[in-house]
Image (cartoon, rainbow, N blue to C red; front, side, top):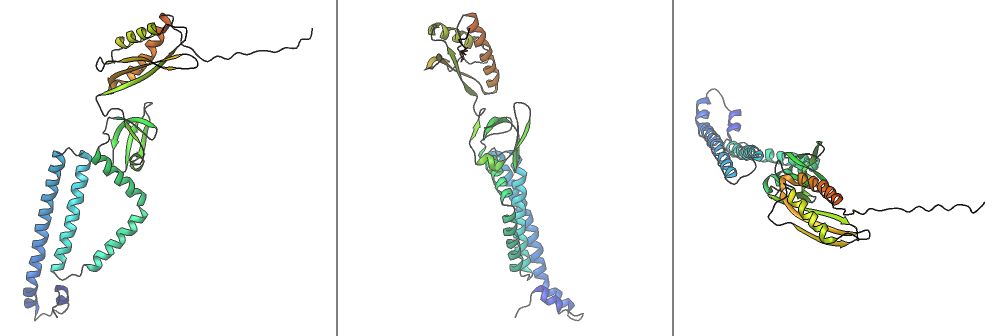
Length: 280
């Protein structure tokens, strides 16, 4: 029965020391060569992976993580192969690592879900830093994307940390994914007002607001006959970064223009009847 390197070490004596060293020398050299070559090759593979990610435009925040993960994994495999060359039984070692991994996975199940969500976001790129998004009813500008969470800055300048698992399991709206975004505005006028005149006034306001784009051409039309008045819609495009500027400008200028042209904006009213005693 052939003895492993470490079994042989236990049986070494001073007289047989040179011979044992010579017997073990090929195993030791093989171990060193495998470690040196394997670590070098794993480094090359990691650098090649970095170049591929840069060429394909993968988000930079994921570069170092994937590089280190791949290199470490490859070097663990190389180390296991090298240990086998000197007679180390790695089966129990691998089994112990596997059991520890399963135990850790169960305890960190939620964290793993968050981490997987971060990987999915960074690879699929549904949004990037600087985009204005809505996630599960929350609106804000993306400040930072990490593996476990994404940071948003809301319109009132609050910083909100959103777990990535929530992002990947809810509907996401990216308002700045494209260069243009459409304003869908509605204005109600009285049934007594002239619709043609109201549409002309709205067209003038649209032309006056500098944030509104000429192309695609804005649409102004009657959209509803409501209980309190006629509802007109204005569909106009603006640059995705100017959405709120255009929205606020339209709301203010339409009110001023309607007042100037005697166009009524109806509102709900309540009639109060006071019933008194007929006593004299």
